[in-house]
Length: 272
Ligand code: 13P
Ligand code: ZN
Image 1 (cartoon, rainbow, N blue to C red):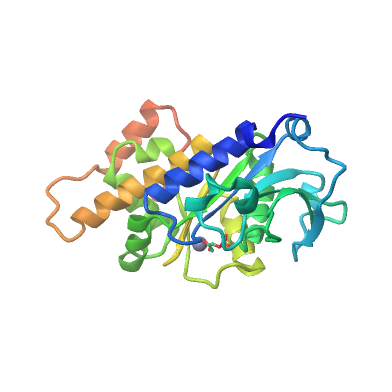
Image 2 (image 1 turned 180 degrees about the vertical axis):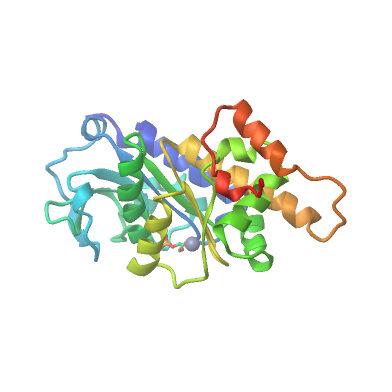
């Protein structure tokens, strides 16, 4: 059996959480990541018959029965993951009842998966129906994106349009746009259901006055989606209060999307 700490998926979680912490997005225990793994790749590192303990999830994830995820722990700090992955991360498998997680590795101090597991697993279920290559759900508190939710209308179309206008390549990175939820209590099934519903249309969901969710086929793609929104939000926060002499017009956004041959949310532009 190979050493789990050398597994590429553990290494990726360590590197990504460290990177996000240093960007200032994940203060204290802010943020969480879940990454769906291939059973065969996990079997190279762990005895899949050895369930350390079981943890109820509190919701039904029947679609994910037997699926294995590496997930950040609740209350754990992104800054600490790289130094003690076995305490700050866990590898869970959704049990046959669909409502229990079987712990295969990690949460060494008796901990458990993120309080946002409902939003993560419900989003995985939604995105897998849209794209069989989907694997990663990431939640974080990027500063400018959060700041923007204080001063911008929390509306899918208006928020997406403002972000698209900030830099030319936004529409190329997320032509499907951004879903936006109002402020809600976090860490429960209700916000999970609302997030997963938005994930039917979007790979990015902003939580007003809280943070953002991204979904993608790997860590780079998912991180890249969020990073691009955050860059645009930084631009918005730098210029929103200044006179605007130039902007990317809707015809120009269309021209970029067409040049890249993209299916984009045409209804989010105000063309005729
Ligand atoms: P957890 O520590 O439970 O992952 O929660 C962090 C967070 O960002 C809640 O939205
Ligand atoms: Zn959060």
